Image (cartoon, rainbow, N blue to C red; front, side):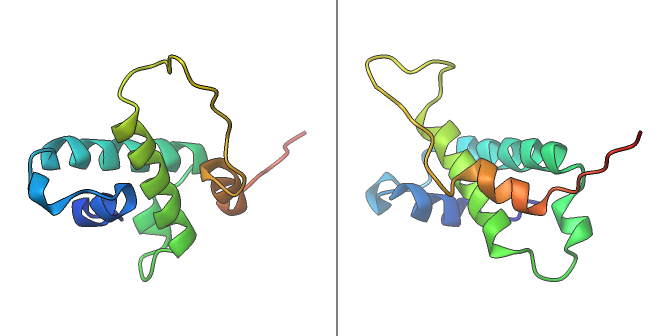
Length: 103
């Protein structure tokens, strides 16, 4: 189950109501992929670890990544200078990661 709804992703990207449900299936796939990717980086399933309320920061990370993948559907960006935002997806994820150093 996704921790972010399609309606919430539409809010994230500033979706216009006149476009209706045109991309709902695509947005659902982007949400699922973003959550799966983040869970693999974290090493745990978000909804299992946080069975009650999911931390808003993790919901935000899924929203940012899903929005990025929705808006940028190709593997490269052409004609732009991109830079990672401070307090973006990776800094959020790092707050929740568990590190172990076996030696």
